Each structure stands twice: as C-alpha cells, then as structure tokens.
Amino acid sequence: MDSTVFPVDKFRTLKTVVRNLCQGLSSLLFPTACIVCDQRIEEPQAVVCQNCWSDLKLLSVDIIKTKPIPEQLDAILPVFEFNDTMQKIIHGLKYGGYKSSGIHLGRLMASRLPREFLLKDTLLMPVPLHPIKKRERGYNQSLFIARGVAEVSGNTVRDNILKRVKNTVTQTHLDARERHENMLGAFAINRSCDLSGINSVVLIDDVFTTGATMNAAAAVLKSYGVASIRGLTVAAPI
Ligand SMILES: [Zn+2]
Image (tube, rainbow, N blue to C red; front, side, top):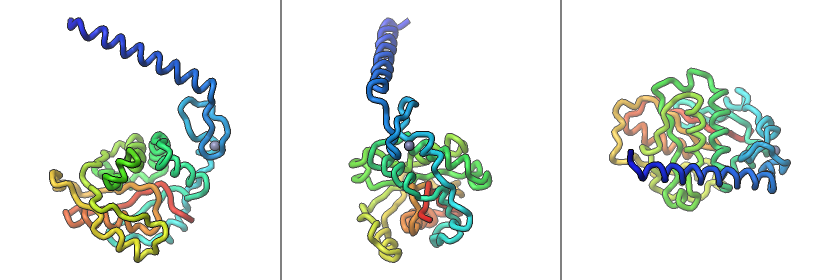
C-alpha cells in the first residue's frame, strides 16, 4: 500500500468534517434568507424558499403560441412566466453566484417538458457567453440550467461546440430589428469540433424575449448541417 495515500485521505476527511461543521454553525448563527421573499429558509444551502419555488407559473400554451419562432429555429419552448419571483431568481443566478438555482430551474423545466421534446439523441447546448463576460461573471448561467435539465432527461450537455466571438452590447433597450443586427456574427463553432452525426440540438437560455440571440446561434449550427434546432428557455414575459 502506498504510505502517502492514507494521510492525504485522512486530511481530506478532516477538512470535510471541519467544513461541514462550519457550514452547520454558520446556518445556525446566520440562517439564510430567501433571495426572493426574505423569509428564513430552514434547508441548508438553499437560497430560494419552497413557497417561492411554488410561486412559479407555467406559461400557457396560448401565450407560447404568441411568441414568434425565430427563422433559424424549428420551435421554441419557454417554460415559466417571467413574473417577479422568476425575475429575482434569475437575477440571483446571473449576478449573485447562485448556480444551484440554475440547476433547480433546469430540473423543474425538464419535469414539465413533453417527452418528445427531448429524444435521446438530442444534444443540449447552453447559449455561450463571450469569454470576457464569462470571466467577469465567473460562469455561464445557462450551463447550470442545462445540467439541471440533463439530470432529469438524461440528455448530453455540450458546451464546447458553440462559442461567442462578439461581445455584444446589452439588448435591454434595443428593438427586435436592432437586436437582430446586434447579434449578427456573434457566434462561431470551435474549430476542433466535428458536427457530423449531430442532427438535433436544443439551445438553452434563461429568458426568451425576441429570440435574436438563439437565432444567431442556430444560424451557425444550421450552416454546419445540423437539421433540427429548437430553443428551450426558463421563462418568457407574458
Ligand atoms: Zn421565498
């Protein structure tokens, strides 16, 4: 037996015990407040309370039908209403570092999807951030949403195929045409990736507004021969 293995393992165990003890003490002394309603949360490490998760509303089929499908996509499916609760959860996911909320949102979405939406060979691709934005934020929130979806659906997540090559300005104050122009040439395919054999992709993003971002990402995938590209988002405004 390698004599160095045992002490290292022992040290790790001790570190874990100390970390768990500190977390336990900290949640006892400073109970977490829900990032949405500010009520105390009993579950360790949760940042959103059960009441607020229950407050999320599925978008009705009638509302989804009013959303224009961007021309490069075959379908779009925003799952929840972008209500005040959702706005706060997504804000925490993007700017507060609460990645676990992204995973939980993904799980909730997947459990509500029609089975035929995610067939086995469909790849899940989170819409990538530009490297500068990713460095600032530290992570891509859509990757965590995709991981949550995959946990339930069993589909494969690929976040190394698409890349964002243009650091676009924020789209909040742009109209649909300006958003479309803003996104032109925003995405590319990583050179080392072989897309042959990929027939079905579901792009994953947080909020669906005009779909300009997903459209630009889909255009690049289509140009590489991907036959079916659909968009799945956590939410869309009513
Ligand atoms: Zn709450």
